Amino acid sequence: MDGLLNFADGQPFAIGSVSYFMGEPGEQAAGRLLLRIAVEGQWLIAAVDTGGHYLVCQPGLADALDPHLTDPLEEITLEIRGLKYRGTLYLLSVEIPASQGENLVVPATVFIPKLAHGQVWLLPSFVGFAGVLDRLRFAVDPAADTFYFGPLEE
Amino acid sequence: MSVSVLTKTKTKRGTRTRTGKKTARASKSADGLAGLKAAAHAGNELAFLDARRAIDWSKRSAKEYSQAVRWAIEAGAHEAARQLAVQGAERYPDHAELVKFARVLNPPKAFSSHLPPDPSVKADIDWFAKHSLEYHGQWVAVKNGHLLGAAPTIQALMEMVPSWRETTITQIMW
Image: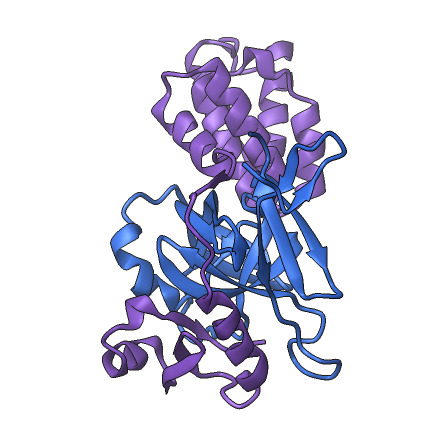
C-alpha cells in the first residue's frame, strides 16, 4: 500500500486525503473542520471534534439510517456542548472518502439522539475522538484544507 | 447512599450476619460498587473514576463488569466504560453482553476499502463551503456539487428528492 504521507522508514502514515472546509472568522462554522463522510453508505457532513466521544449524528438522520439501526447497544445520556441528550449507541460502518489515495472504512461507535418533547437540535453531526478518530491515523494540512488519514496497522 | 443491585447479590450469598449487620468485607465491597452507582446517577465522571480505582476488579463477576460499564457511560466516563468493557470481555469471553459492549465501545481499527478516489467529494465540499450561510437551518441534498433539494425537515427532503440515498444529506447547523 502506497502512502500519501510516510514514516521515516517508508511505512505509510496516510493512504488517503480529502478536502475539508471551515467557516471564515465571524461565521458560525468558524474554527470547525467539516468533512464529508458516509455512515452505512449515507453521505453526510460532520464536524471534527477531537474532544468529543463517538460519532454523534443529527437526530433527523435516524430516518435515513433506519434500516441499519437494528442492533442497539444501550440507551444513554450524552452531554453535548453543555446540554444532555438521550439517545442510543450503535456500532456502524463509517467511511472517509478519498479525493486522493484510498478510502478508509472505520467501524465506529455512533450515538443517535432521540429528542425529548420540546427539545431542539441546533448542531451539526460530530466526529469524535473516542470511538472514531482513535481508530485511525490522521493529520491536517491547514494550508491546503486537507485531511489525511490511514489505518493504524498494516 | 443508595444501595446497588450488586449489594443485594452479596446479601443473598449470606454476607450479612443473622442480626443484619454486614461483614467488614461485604461492607467494603458494597461501598465500592455503590460509589460507582452514586457517581453515575450524579453524572460525576471524576467521582466515578475515583470509585473505580478503589475496586479490586479481579474479584468481580461478569454481571458486575456489565453493570459498571453502564454506570460508566451514565457518569460520562466513556474511556473508563471502554476499558471496563474490554477488560470484562477478556475475562468473560462467553458473556454476550460484555462482548457486545466491547465490540461497540472498542470497535476494530480502520481499514482501506481499496476503492479509487471519489472526485465528487471536492465538488460537494465546495458547495457546502460556498452556500452554507444561504441555506442555514435547512436540510439539503447535494450531489456532485449541485443542490438537488432543500427543505425544513428531512422527511420533506426525502419526498422532494427520491434519490436522496445517493446524495450528501445534512442539516446545515454550523
